[in-house]
Length: 182
Ligand code: CO
Image (cartoon, rainbow, N blue to C red):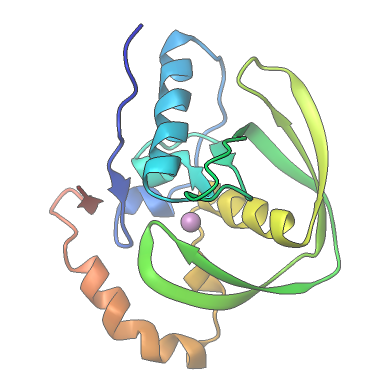
């Protein structure tokens, strides 16, 4: 059994974060290993969600564990493959951050209640209803699959003071369009 690997996280400026991720066609052993690495990396990086594009893999996959904390360390990861938000309603304001946009925390508007259809790591189909905080986490991760970052949702006025920080993050992008934090 190969062991789990800490995957390097892609940072603001990396082109993979702006791509539309591809649907997963088949769940083979290689993909299952990737899922383990993705989950491992989320916890190691203190995330409550991590999308495949954030580790440079442009596939429609993310993992969440909204209530995980390092202190309690009770792990209940949910892997969502080919997720679709099939119902959405209401509105909420959420304070968000992102492993790919370090040190920036801002309030964004999200739907308050959603219904999500997805496949788990065995390809089985599920539907879940989520609201409030969990709905927020799912919508944030879902956006990553469409090349959208939470800072894109801010008004121009609110983006202005963040510009220097974003420019600094972007400045380490290499000639291949990769911006990897090791
Ligand atoms: Co994010």
